[in-house]
Length: 137
Image 1 (cartoon, rainbow, N blue to C red):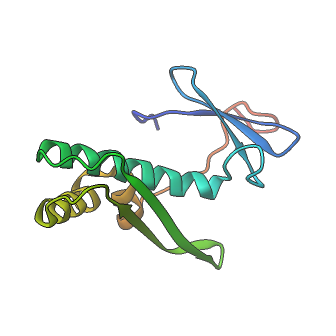
Image 2: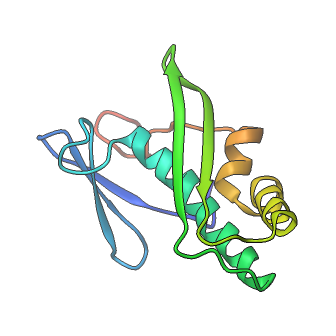
């Protein structure tokens, strides 16, 4: 199966992972969150950054910018999965509450792909590449 999004990862002996995108941009992931964000922290970061950018763009389009915008993402992990996630928007200035709610709702329900994927769920496959060591090709 081939999709329209792709990352490559290399696992190192120090429990870090180098993630590389199609542009060659790299990110270090650390299982312990010391040398880079942990995988779960990256999930929260993806949700927060996706939400932040969409929300800020919508507020700008409504001619009521809120930058600098600070976002916090909190959640609770139990039984090896996240039980809930919350995105909190800390706005600067005094934006119109109607515009804020419109941007919040549209971000959460229509625009932020990460939020919608987490809310609705998405099938995940784990496959071994053909020809890998010990796997018939």
